[in-house]
Image (tube, rainbow, N blue to C red; front, top):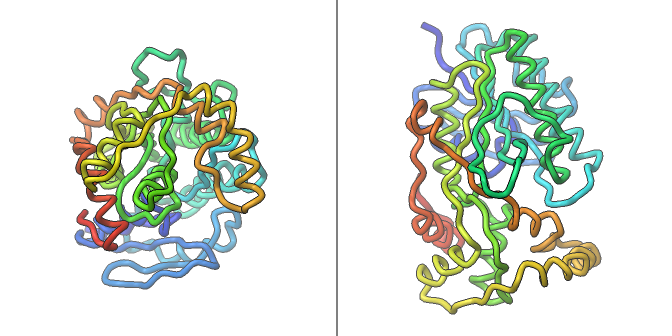
Length: 332
């Protein structure tokens, strides 16, 4: 029997690095892809390689010597954007990078590809229906730059599966949780609350899910998912007011008010301009505020039934995220 090898792109990212934390406990080998300018330390069964999914020639080393292994590629590399326009870097990483990974999986006869898409790749259809898995994706049917690129990339994976590649797709909802130091927008929100600099929240909400639950869902999908199938890895709908209350309880902190979404939306261009001038990511943009008012109700019934997927209580997620931000420690 061949030994198990995972190749994981975007290995320094929030979700991919959490997946690697779990794989360190398994009898397998892990090759993590990080960007040329990034750093990480090899340890145990994990070895890091430098490369860029937009430049396939840089990925030859990480895909070399695969013959002795049963190989699963987990493609987690991607750019997240809360903007409205598809920029060149966003398209090159999310769409062209995914197509490059598909081509490499075919070239090296990889046993299985798990693509980490997003619920944003799925058309909302309306504001009240519970959103479930679909079998086709179109950038024309979604709103926002990030959603557009993820829909196009997801369809490319679906097409590859129809052509014979053993590929599976997962759609996480809004990922939050420990092991992130501020790149995640909700982590930024929590950091501002902890620092006392958060003026308040907004009305509205979304489906938020713990990064650890998504990581376990990804690994279960990689092992047990059906070729060509998609799985939503969500939790449930939470208002921003809910999250603020969980933060208050976890810290014995102050209550924060939530400003009307309509009012904050009118100020969004000012937030974006201020962020641009200060060279800092704005907490609120027109697209992020749109998301807070969009349909954020997703069903993870399929993942629960077929993968044993079970998201934890959000109170625990917020508590553990705060503990990680304060101490640098958390449990997988």
